[in-house]
Image (cartoon, rainbow, N blue to C red; front, side, top):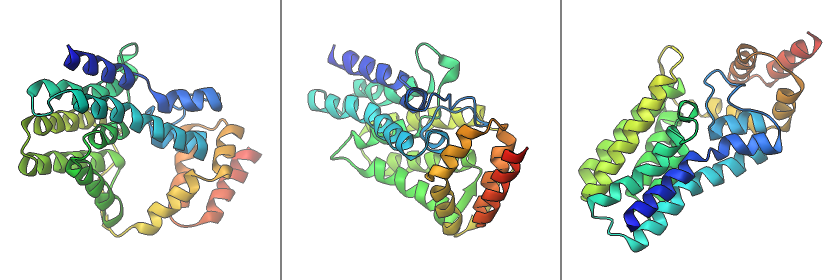
Length: 253
């Protein structure tokens, strides 16, 4: 019964889309309506809700994966195959929320939370973090959907060959499968690009998304996502002036 309890707890928490509700309550915006991918995820919470909404969303999304797994392993046998549903439940709940199955997210942050919940077994979380950093800063794979597919695929392979616990091996494989599937169905047809060492690009984008100017810009304008994307790409090229030029043009329009 305890396995069932923690599975239901994980699915219920996973189905609560904190990255959607946080900007909705604090900023009164629907982050699913603003970006082209309509994803209720942490990245869009940062992008459209600002730094505070993004940070709070990040903490809550990590916690909803962490809590049921971390508590579950205190009462359950993690080597039992019955522990697999406990691992997958928060991710599955985020990807296919109970009340709005078609409105789920990509479940990246929830996946990190689940893997952190396996503490002191940290290898799965380290693998996932390593590949995300590697394919974001060293060998830069874009768009994000391709980067996530490669990252989660390699993460699952590493867990399979190094973590000799069947429940964690299978659970990691299923987590990767759900995340990859969610990225495929949200794929917008962008071409694949691979380049080396794009640290400046990534830092510039991070600074832009955490800037109060960007958050204020999102609230002052009602421009379509295509205009917003143009602004982001200009800024990512490393020209801050182009951001304000795009902003001024949009405001004057």
